[in-house]
Length: 138
Image (cartoon, rainbow, N blue to C red):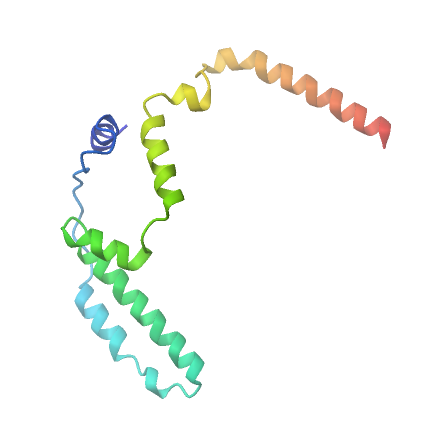
């Protein structure tokens, strides 16, 4: 598990991870300018023209999100682009934060590949019996 993930999970989400991001290989501002220079007004169908404008706005917001990675404005841009999480999504996130410390409680005990062989053999026998039973009743 990477160091920042371990640090974040150990703190139960109280410490924000500190990631290092590589430089963008593009000029995001130039791309946003190109988006807004597209000749959308030349589209005759009003519905299609509106659709293009919405897509351009969404792409521009995504560019803002990329530019703000690692800054204080990332949270705002993220909320603007993805929206605020629902109460259910927050509850799931809290559950996952607390469940990570005890994965065996969520997933059961962890077994080695050698310990799994008898279980797989038992399942295979059960499936074989089930397949025979189903073929007789058909």
